[in-house]
Amino acid sequence: MSKDRISVYKFGGASVKSAEAFRNLAQIVQTNGSEQRLLLVVSAMGKTTNALEELLNLASQQREYEQAFLQLKAYHQEVLHELFPDRDHPVYQRLDHLFELLHLQLGSTPQNDNFDKVYDQTVSFGELFSSSILHHFLEAQGFPNTLLDSRKYIQTDNNWREARVDWGWSERLIKRDVLPLLQEGLVVTQGFLGGTNNGLTTTLGREGSDFSAAIFAFCLDAEGMYIWKDVPGLLNADPKYFQETVCYAEISYQETVEMAYYGASVIHPKTIKPLANKQIPLYVKSFLNPAGAGTKISDCRFEKFAPAYIIKENQCLVSFSVKDFTFISEQNLGTIFNALSELRIKINVMQNSAISFSICTDYHPTRLHRLIQTLHDQFVIHYNTELRLYTIKNYDADSLAKMLQDKEVLLEQRTRTTFQFVSK
Ligand code: ASP
Ligand code: MG
Image (cartoon, rainbow, N blue to C red; front, side, top):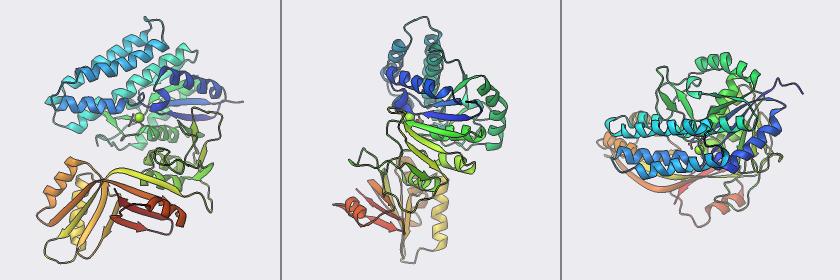
């Protein structure tokens, strides 16, 4: 078979969480790599990003972080020891060096007051570790490959923690350099990371590696993008909450985008647009059963399919009322929306009545307090936290009953296809 096809494979944290997982990944590359040119986009190992967030929090509060640092280092070293019996292998030096840089970064945290900027310079180490290990491991297994620094290719602005991509610039760079590299062999790069034009690291939002892979797929005009996960494909519900789940064999970009938007954790919400714009199919497959069919997401249409259940945790319901019993006006709404946009508070659901306006949003304590500070002169503001936003797409009587059972509903909204409510 000719090797003209380019595919982008994204491996999430679970697919590189242990030495065994790395070996399994190499097996997938071996099975599929002879038929196509592969770009591998890898996330941080296991729960490393959470651990880095925790380290940063400790450092920024001037609390003790050495122990947590050593723990994270030990986790990576354990995997190295299993994968590279030769202790003189250059991967050891490389990882030591990266951990030294992380240590320096943590040490300089308290002096820096732009938390979000420091966040990106710190939390990005997870992908630098994992991609380095993958690069060396594949090489040791007989798969020569280039380790690409995605920060030099995914060019972004400095909207820290949720950087916006400069598509034109990124596409030019990726076409210029990555296409020829793929002619030579495998390419390995980091998910989640981007870079500014003055060389600083940015991140694309938590769970953003899917989006990274889609950016590369778009810029390379790939034939397909594959997300390798620990589930059989795109499911109609998170197995964490539901015992019985259905795996969709095929589903449209549009349905998927909506599910991701409502909070299905399976795919990062920004992933679909670049793929849909170029009609690049997205496959969700299981790294535990690579031969399984998985799910194909493309520009298809189906009349009816299993209701999808989506639960978004850590929600906060905020209501704004005018103080003098006048109605909520467009001008009031304008004021509220401006404040929300400035504080980067995203609305998940909203509703208005005569004298109040309510939104359901992810709970960020500092942003919420700033919102209250900004608006408390003009509005009476109440809020409830520790809530969940429940969404059912393609709902019917049965699915509604199942989801609503024993729940006190604080806000609800329905369209012809989608039912949403906020509850404990
Ligand atoms: N490692 C990053 C995170 O956990 C990005 C990703 O996994 O997609 O958020
Ligand atoms: Mg991750």
